[in-house]
Image (cartoon, rainbow, N blue to C red; front, side, top):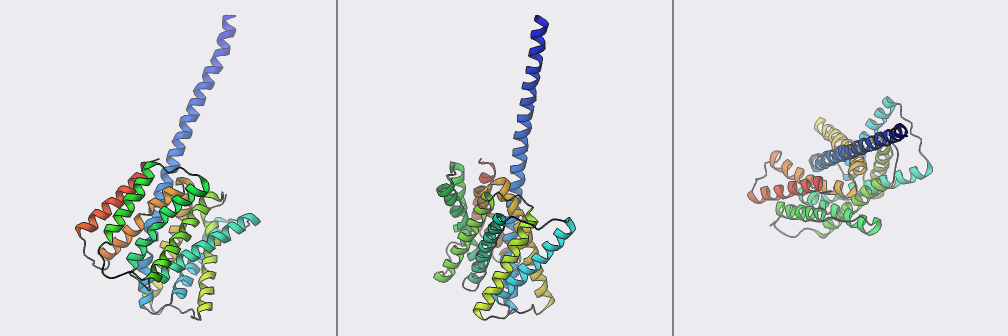
Length: 317
């Protein structure tokens, strides 16, 4: 009797131990996956923040917005095609997946076009800063439509981010053009919806495959815009021009989009959006390092607040 009872208890204990081990393993995997998602979010923000660097150089060579975006997305798409061929990855998608990918492509196309158009109306650094309103838009969309609860750290990180951004460009001269502000806000809204759709769509495919469809939609969108505006697609006029086309195709297009897929998937929409605080920070650093802008105490305080917001976003949940 006693031996039988012992035999019955041993498997139960072992099962409990195995269950505890699996639980710890699962928790550890979740943490590491989330950490990877946040790293991707940081890198995506930095890459996307280099948009003004290439765009302004190409505008200085006389290229139109449509031409810049067409070559940026077209070259990025060709690189993605080469990667998919090397990976022997199928491009087949279901009807539902196709419409989701088409929607993502349309959203990113609108976001990029409106942002690049705003560079003609206002300073690119200011435009990149106003673009940072998209974390609040993302958080509101998730709270209103998907009932995602906003914890106090999330709210504090958003507030710190906006205070930091305000300090970065506070005290500017003159009034910002209404048309430019509207364009950037539309860009921010499109970008926020893009992040939410990416997170909620449940697409089960590689980021390269996703961006194969997104980038071709963006290139076609730029071409359509040029045709409607009567602006011909022109080639870059110099080796430097081609260099910046390559830069825009690889860094703020392929690298940012691929990293954004992983960030939204593994870190969540709101966290990914808040980590985007590094976008205006990148724009400021480019201005200081590349264009010799003056680094002030106010600028330093703003950067510290934005980095503080990033840390809260990373460790808040």
